[in-house]
Length: 204
Image 1 (cartoon, rainbow, N blue to C red):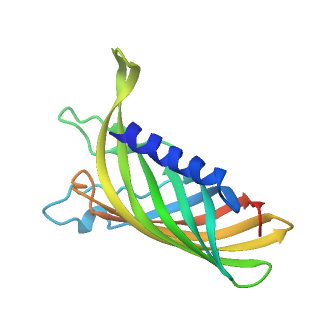
Image 2: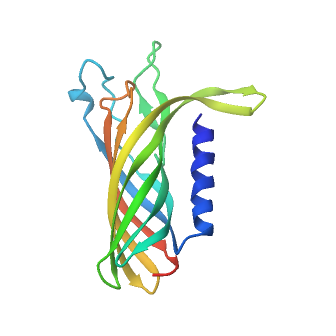
């Protein structure tokens, strides 16, 4: 299901690219905050998904324009750069894990002036948590050394594109994830915040 969602998102993204007025890929570095393990309620595991550095990659296509407003789609993925340690198993061992968040959203961008564009978006996506094992498991699709726990999510977010040189921009940004049945962690809500660097192709 996760692969089908990503394939559909990429298809729509690059279909939009064919008709777009603007294309903006970007790479970012982020932190993730959520409810602490100590504050988890009875419906969630006392394990915070936050901690570590979260790289991200995303791109948008803008194909509708109304004076200073543009509309289109944006897709991004953020993952924990290093493996974290999950709660100990029944034998007292820590379980290495890595959360991955991916989204596909509608986007509205408002051009304030030549150097500043404000963005807001919202949509759907998924959280995939990989729990790493000490050995590989193989099937007809290949071999992996992890099992995955997957959840749907909704999200909202935004950023401010600051053009620092020609078409090169720096974008402070934040994105809030609302994860369905996120029982492996302390909360259903997590916030990603950071800075990305990108480049604008097409019209500005």
